[in-house]
Amino acid sequence: MFDKTMTFTVNEDKEAELKKNLTAIYDALTEKGYNPINQIVGYILSEDPTYITTHNNARNLIRHIDRDELLQVLVRSYLNS
Image (cartoon, rainbow, N blue to C red; front, top):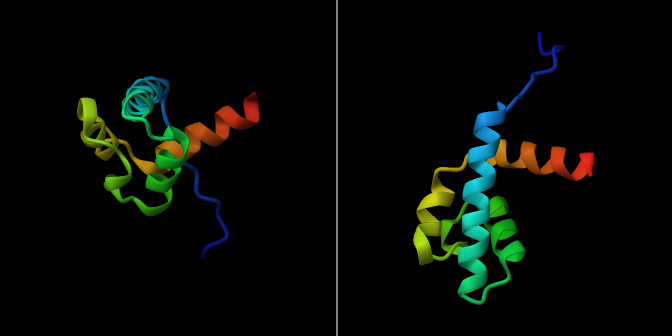
């Protein structure tokens, strides 16, 4: 019954939008003096948007990013580099 592997994919357009938004979030965190990597990881692990600053609408942007899609893109990028 559960012997099939589920698949998950993100299309290229969605990936480009995700990268654009994540870059904007990274920049906003940097501008406010936060360690952007730590803050983004905190958000990914907890899904608590308070890890992300409201500066430049970054918190609203992170709420529109699906964590599963984000993780897929990050893992693919890490393994392909």
